[in-house]
Amino acid sequence: RKEVEQDPGPFNVPEGATVAFNCTYSNSASQSFFWYRQDCRKEPKLLMSVYSSGNEDGRFTAQLNRASQYISLLIRDSKLSDSATYLCVPSFQKLVFGTGTRLLVSP
Amino acid sequence: EAQVTQNPRYLITVTGKKLTVTCSQNMNHEYMSWYRQDPGLGLRQIYYSMNVEVTDKGDVPEGYKVSRKEKRNFPLILESPSPNQTSLYFCASSFTQAGELFFGEGSRLTVL
Figure 1 (spheres, rainbow over the protein chains, first blue to last red):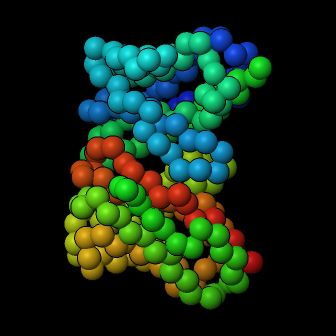
Figure 2: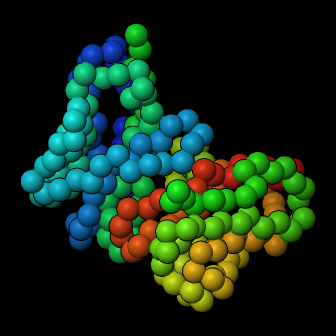
């Protein structure tokens, strides 16, 4: 079983739509969780950390379900600039990167 | 400006010709790491360093060497590159091994 599993997509959505990604991780000892964003051929950048109680940053909401070992990311009111690949990253002693979910937002 | 700088950004080379990709960070981070990214495989860790003179293998270390003589620098060395090392390489740094990673802009390497 892969350490981190994500639907590769692409998710094609119109501007203004709400879209959600899920990710499952295999290591139950993972202690920290992150979502990174990666634009085509560019370096990954931290989008947000994921806290046990769930957290929100503007249009982005992250949730963690430790019992089921999954993390979710919800994007509301999608913008063209949200088009990117979103990497799920649990951490236990080191960060483990998922292969990412590609999002394409169209006009 | 806080950053991780890697060079070269693009390189085409031939099998067996030794090359070094440099990486430097100005954030006083103790932890540094190298990754390669290939389609469908995501980011895979090559080597990492917890501090000066402390390096260790990641998930795919074969064919690579690293050194950490100074805190800010962490070069990646390919002693005898082969075509299967054609990839996009990222250097990253962080205060801790499990904390937010800051990435360089990437080095696209092609080995013919």
